[in-house]
Image 1 (cartoon, helix red, strand yellow):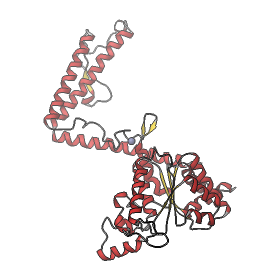
Image 2 (cartoon, rainbow, N blue to C red):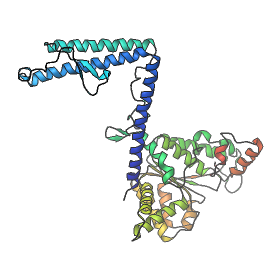
Image 3 (cartoon, protein in one colour):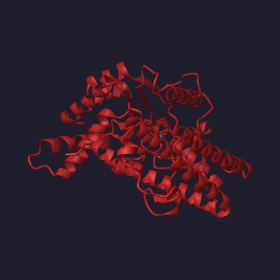
Image 4 (cartoon, rainbow, N blue to C red):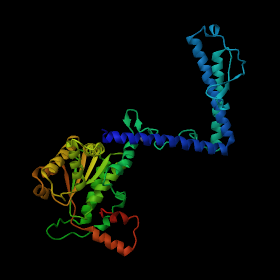
Length: 401
Ligand SMILES: [Zn+2]
């Protein structure tokens, strides 16, 4: 059975193979276009290749003489004229060179070295004169850091996690809205007046939300350094919880973190399927693989976003599974953000004291002001009569903030 990481690794290997091939293809296309525009450049490169081979040959002969001084006497050179062409790899004229039989090897080395450097200098001057990028022969990698291998030394390159995200929709049923970006967060949608009544805090919803957006940007900028990375967003529907949560998720994904966004019903469904497949004597291998992949991700990815917790009744079993996920992540110091229409106290009443105590003890609670902005968004859209790029995020299925 293949785990999520196994399946992803296979997908990633294919992706990086393809990227490297494309990098070489782009390089070849670029060089071909340059040669068409500057035939002299093709000549320079051909000359440099030949001189490079000649230099290598001179070095090899010195090495042969050092390791086997009798070599020339015991195995006399084949009766090759000094200027006979020999082929190294194939018969193309670019891969042939003149055999240098100068008896003074060191001098031969110096000569071929000098000829090589002079040819390179001539080409460099030509490149400067025609403003051609001196790296025109390099493959055009998408990621210059790892040269499209996904690795830097013994570590994964940051681009690998970004690549992982591109596979997410294949594996996860709840993709995040790509419009959920901090730059799209419209604070003007929140009431600037202090709400009166029971929940009067003396601060307007807009000020409260402004504080939460600031907190969220600090959160993503200091994600590695933060001690407490668990957040609990509590508030009525349509108050911006999902949108802010996804802003955090999208930004961290850009930074190369593995982020999983899942609505509460999907989460419980995933956990139940995993358990069912695990316990089944005749589990379907593909379904078991899929369920295991998703469950592994729940327990190991950098950030887990659980949306709408508390919308469904929980059985003892699903309740225990949720506790396992939260506790495992807590023990591994992995970050979790939960959004709920309920307060911690409601959760305690609806579910169990243990869930409430986990959240009260390990999560920073953000109470979103009771201000349904969806109506305001609807009015705004009707008034403008069109959706521009700023309005659109608030009309997605999340409808937030
Ligand atoms: Zn990379």
